[in-house]
Length: 313
Image (tube, rainbow, N blue to C red; front, top):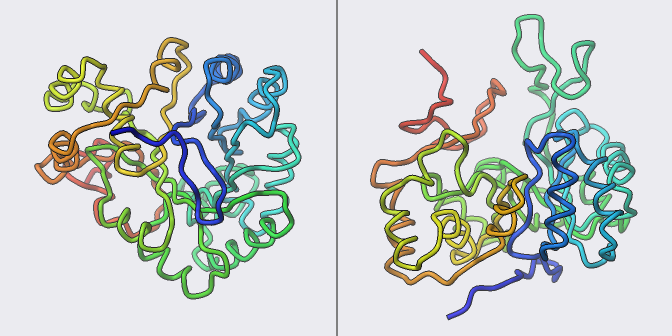
């Protein structure tokens, strides 16, 4: 049994199964990480305007001498650009020093209204996020379809979208999203969302596949037992889990040895996949990324048991 190195999106675009995540990669670190990753064989980079490091990523790509057409580059339209997707795309293309993206995503199903507090993360006087409750995400998607038709992006998709949001978007979409990038790991497997998306030909992409700094995933005894069985690290098991279940995976690191190690994917037996698929249901459900938008995003497990980021009563 082998695991795929690439997946074929619903418009026949080929995407590498493993990509380098650049979220929370600091200036001065992300360029070195990208340069090393490209030398090590990565051909998939996951970026976003809100990460505020796309300029450094672009410099690293340019300096890598890897032909642009060999690199799959993803970016995301930020919440404050939802009224003008083309403007957000233009900024990203300029920063990444490229004429096109391979994949462009709607970062969140939330529009923020820029104001004097910030052009990216604006706040209201009471400290809450400046969310536009009247903005229709169908209008954002219409613009995404237009930039796709322009040829400046080879595929379009969404990020952090739940089933209710997708069901609403389905009523008017002309182009089915190719991807939905969400938090995925054995403590947050999102089985129902995965099935819904698969039925529509939408791939899930896994961010935070290793959990986070404070997540117990890498020290989980059942993950460790499977890692010992295959004589690999727990990280390899967690990354391989996603590819084995048919999801694209985006491990992030700025540590060069871990970048190398995270490219390794192995085939997992059914009994081991069953264990990993059942960890959340066995009481370990947990998320590591739940920003407070002051808006219900439609995830039933958004504030599941054990979530350290759940709002305090």
